[in-house]
Image 1 (cartoon, rainbow, N blue to C red):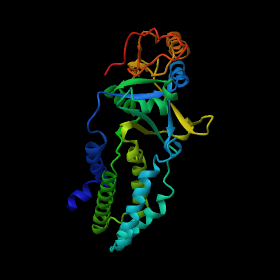
Image 2: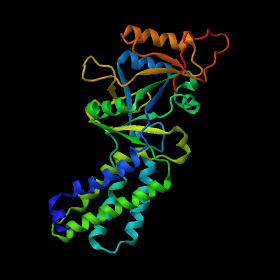
Image 3: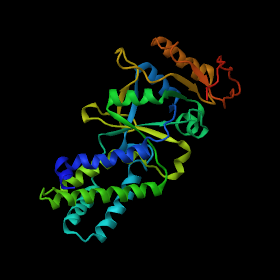
Image 4: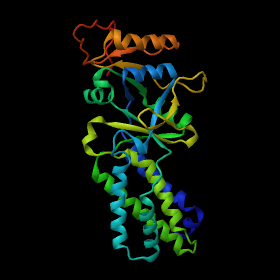
Length: 312
C-alpha cells in the first residue's frame, strides 16, 4: 500500500477511480447516433456560419444544470463533516464546504444531444414547437469530433437520484482515504488544494446529472472547458463559444450526416430556405433533409417536396 502511495500522486490515484465510474455510468449503452435540435433560424445559422454554439454551464436555459448535482454534493459534504472524527479529514471537508459555494463554472461549456431525433417533446421545447430541425451525428463521429478537435468528452445524462447519491458517497469516501493515506506517510497534503482540485473535477461532471422529470429526453452531453478569450455573449445575455462543424481543413471532418425537418415545418418557410443556404455553402448534396414521421402539412401551406422519411 505504501509503495502505491509513493508511486503515484494524489490526482492520478483519484482519477483512476473516476475513470472506473466514467466507464460504468457515463458512457455505457452507447447509442448508434446522437441528435441535436435547433430552430429553423438556428439551423440556417449553423449552415451559413459553419459553427454551432455551446453554452456556458452556469448560464444554461435549464436552471437545474450544474446546480442540481452541486446541491446534492453539498448535502453529502455537510453530512460527512458533521460525523467526521479524524482531525485531518475534518480540515479537508471544511475546505470543501468553504469552496463549494464558489465552484467556477465560467469556462465549462455544454452541447446537449439526444438519442432520439424525432421526439415530440424535444421538437416542442427546443425546435420552435416543431417548426425547427434536428441533425444526426453518428456516435463515433461525434466522439472523435469532440475529443480530437475540442478537447471535450461525451457523457450520458443520469436521471436516477440514487445513482447520484451513491457516486457522491463513494467519491467522498475515496477522496478521504487517499488524503489520509498521504497524511499517514508524511506527505503533508494541502487540504485546500485537494478540495479545490476535487470540486473542479466535480464541476466538470455535474452537467451529466439531471432531475428525473427530464428522463424522456434521454440526453447525452458534450462537455468541455474553453478559456475566456473565446467566450461570446448572445443577445439574451448567455455566454457561449462557437464550435466549428464545417471546415476547409480536411482533418476536421463534419460530424453531421443528415438533417430532419420537424413535424410542423413548412416547405416554403422552413425547408426550402435551409436547402438554399446549404446549396450556397456547397453542402447541399451532402446533407439530405428528411421529414419527421409526425409531419403534417399546415393549413394553407404547400406540401414539402421531400419523399424521404427520417430513418429509425
